[in-house]
Image (cartoon, rainbow, N blue to C red; front, top):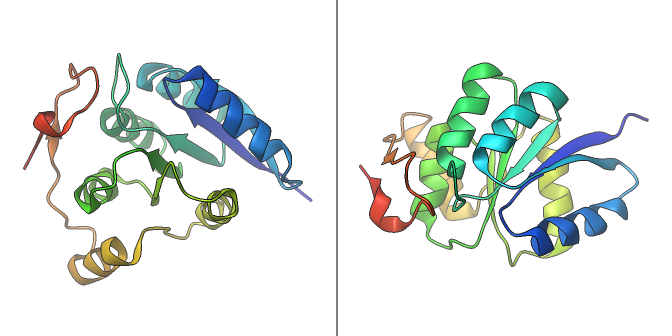
Amino acid sequence: MKKITVLITDDHAFFRQGLCALLKAESDIDVVGKARNGREAVRMARTLRPDVILMDIAMPVLNGFEATRQILAANPAAKVLILSAHRDDEYGEFMAAAGAVGFLEKRSASKVLSKAIREAAKGNLFFRPAIAKRIARDGKALARPRISARSKKGTASSVRR
């Protein structure tokens, strides 16, 4: 059985290490890389070509929105799953507009994360019901926000319609 390969992208080492340890318990998931920022994620996604990329939004050097956009420009088949501390549905919509296939809060249960990774690997979307309803209603034509690539954290103030 082929394992689902995953690239973890988060600027907090403790969180990356914790996710890696958590996912090692899953027999069908293999963490192939850990990126500290969006720029590193773009580079690693090109070389490792993982099945699923777990992406934080707020990171230094290059935020998750721009990293997702660049990864998908280079490889439209990539599956980017957002794992963020942001709870606002608008962030999920922004990331869907960038091409992400799912959006989870970092406080989600580990079984939800594992399920989301499996669904993303199959090519399915994995969003909260409120976000999924808007995507279904509006299709992929969600307004693409502009997030400054210079923004260190990708904060709400750097997100504009």
